[in-house]
Amino acid sequence: MSLLRRLNRPLRQLRRRSLVARLQEAARANGGARRHYVVCGSDPLAYRLIEDLVHRYGVPVTAVVTPRRRADWPDVAEIPGIRTVRVSRVDEQALRGARLESAAAIAFADQDDIGNIHLALLAREINPRVRLVVRMFNMRLGEGVTRLFADRPPAVLSDAEMAAPEFVAVALGEVDANTIRLHGRTLFVTRRRDVPPSDVVCGLADTSLPNRPDILPGEVRRANIVLARSDSTQPQPTAEPVRRRRHRRRPVFILVRALRGLVSQKLQRAALALVGLVAVAGVALALRQGYGPWEAIDKTLLTAISGATEESRDALVQVLQLVLVVAGIALVPVLTAAVVEGLVNARLAVARGRLQAPIEDHVIVVGLGNVGTRVIKELHDRGVGVVAIDKDEHARGAVLARQLGIPLIVGDASQPETLNAACVHQCRALVVLSTDDVSNLEAALHGRAVHPQLRVVLRLFDGDFAQRVQRAFSIAFSRSVSYLAAPAFAAAMMEQEIVQTIPIERHVLLIAEVSVGRGAALDGAAVTAVDQTGAARVIALARAGEPEPLWTPGLDERLSGQDRLTVVATRDGLNRTLARAAPPATPEPAQQHGPAPRRGPAAGPRTR
Image 1 (cartoon, rainbow, N blue to C red):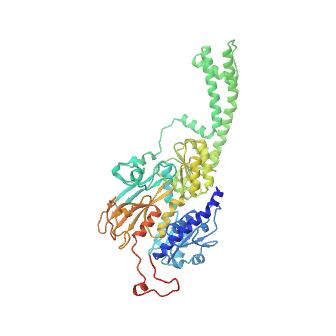
Image 2 (cartoon, one colour):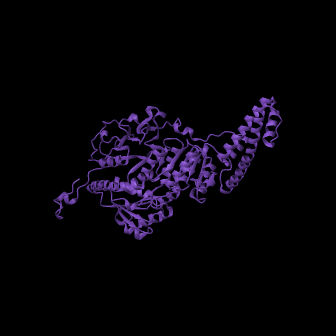
Image 3 (tube, rainbow, N blue to C red):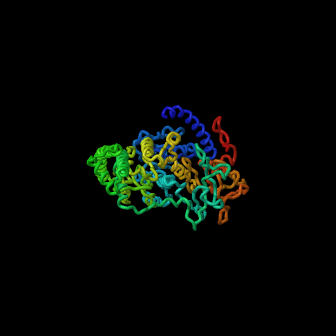
């Protein structure tokens, strides 16, 4: 796979350079290249954010890069078309070296709440007009940060808060866990079959295709994933299976389930086979000899345990007694081994904080970092049974798990015994959220080996790797945290009004507000000029001066200046819509009063 990446990298870079050149030329024509954008960070989120800014918005980017904490993280410096400032740590000198004084916006994308706050204060001192986009995990602290900048508050975003609902929804078999409040309506993402046709606002995707979903298909009725309005008098259809099923269990059943969790499956199968053999031989012997029920039990146990047999000239009776004796001799060491293994595992369970009682219909969450912490909290709040696993007993989510009473297993999820201790054979889903793609896949394969029908949700950064995993191992559910969060960070830097992001498998759709400027390309055009297959759909049109918007306007509706469109679009589709909705650039003073001054052979008037 690494060889394939090296072979494809030059071709991809050539295509990206061509695309970047076209986008930057368009940006210069609109006067957008006068100021640049700065991104501080070297992790996957920073990588995706810079890619969006360069390849989709066509703006110049300066990356302030510190040494990568992990060798498997992508190298930000490999993105073509950016200026890179490599430093050992980000400080005032590094920000000035990135020309922050002339930057339009700066994003702090490292996973360091306190460090990002300090850098945001420093950046505002250097450039009071710069837009700040700050990555935070603790959103309560983030709310306090916004109050520090009363004049121009920064955009405080949490990638974990954006991605966690998607992992929860996929683990529970839902389409989307979020609701969207828009123009007085509550919208949600669901399957078309779960809502009446009158409630459908927009068809989002056709996910029935084997390779990849068809986003915003031309034939709207083909979309099986839709955006629908919510009826406040009825519960949403996807919320029904979320609650944990609670049943009263008898003490004997609880004891049996506890032993099953402490004893390996090989010993369980061996013991069951021998017990079954003793039972069958005992029943056959009782029928042959004409014993009553209690006498049959007594003779069977006595023969199997002590080896005592009765004299008989019946050959079948002799064979049955021999089977009982041999099975009894084999059963004793198997039961002894099971008891010893159970006691040892029970001690380890107490020492390592493992399960004290069996659990079923639960979700196993592996990796208690930023995203894993959010996931176990949301699952717990929704009443779903959770078992958490992490190698580090001091991980960020370990403290929360203990506070919430969530069983915590300290161990390596890529080891079968760790997953067995979490009762993987009877769980609802396995959600693997560590930052190591290889370890995540290894844990998923071990889970599938124990539970072939297990619903596995993987966190994978590399989209190509995720597609190969899906084809090779039939693991259909994988998500990338950085891919889900990067569009919102990029939109905040570009001051776009993104209402919500909608994940569709490994793709992201954006719900955004677009203002039509006077004299723009869309001024006077019909709605059909915005609706593009696979790119954008208009779901609402707010006329200037009218209090209520027009939902799902007809394609022949004419647009005018100061109208506001609510669109569902891909990132490329939104960029094209914004470009066509923008008013024409104001001519420079020199062009208004006369010919431009001569600047050499290439001098001449600027054109759009």
